[in-house]
Length: 155
Image (cartoon, rainbow, N blue to C red; front, side, top):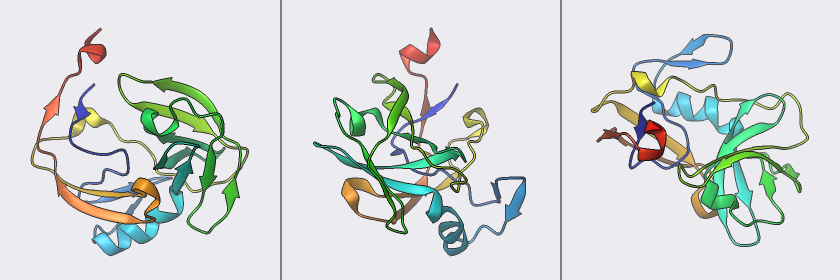
């Protein structure tokens, strides 16, 4: 599996076209993409950290960086609407890959489907949307500058 380097965990979208749940293809303007994806992005707060994540399943399952939830006793999840969940459960985490999968007790949340990272190429334009350090709906764009294999991924 290829992993993107230099890209914070947020949303990775190429500018050619975007496929959102149920195969719906939408126009690729940055503004439209941000409007469509923003509801699936959440702010994650622990006793020590602030970060962002996004829903990958409508049952409340979301993804964030491991370092955001590392050693947390309490994890609070806040939607862009202001709705807050005071308890999130860690389903799986990998410190070396800096990824964590969590779940809140919610249903029918907006999702961002995951794509196959093996199809990504150096030079593709990307859009990152997140809430680093609690700064809601922060947006940045760039290009994939390199694709590297991590030793842990090779095993």
